[in-house]
Image 1 (cartoon, rainbow, N blue to C red):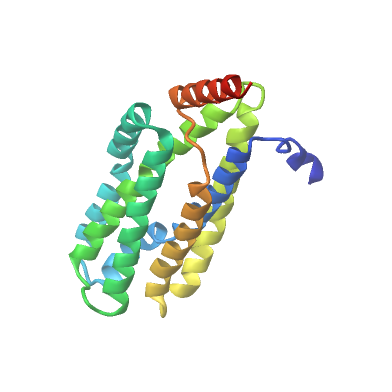
Image 2 (image 1 turned 90 degrees about the vertical axis):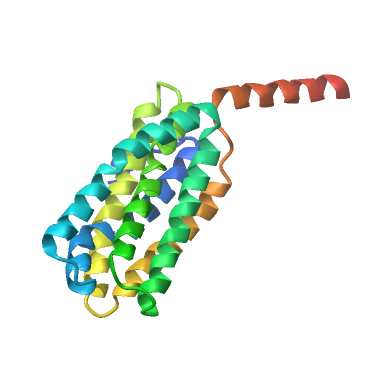
Length: 214
């Protein structure tokens, strides 16, 4: 086992941060495996409508990837990642309060879940781009492998937890997701901007500061 994980030593600090966040995101994202069941049993939405909501939610990944990729190239990876993640957290907390306190239990929650998945999907491209930015060809495969390994571990644990909570503590699924995401957001907040032009400007500023001091 030690030999397997030995290849993941010495990777970039950003890669380790992103791996932790992907684990938390995947583990906290245990809502969507139960989405259809939640819509039908808890919100009393007709099965065919619930299926339609689920399909739309899955398809959100396509426009989300295009939009986030374009904005990441123009503005920066960090700002897109953090802002998308923050909106996602706010929506999940909103769903928790609406459902837990029985304020609203109808198709509005289903629509909010779709919007939440849109913003969650918008985090995927910046994460992959940051990994590419901070790695060299010699360790890029190991870096992506480590992040995907963390994500798969999260996917394995998440539905297991949700399975215990779904029947009697459904709202706790949303609360757990939101709290896990807050932890991930805090970890991500320490990331530096990795957009190449930003890095070049940073290096220029540093060199100018050194030359002035000398």
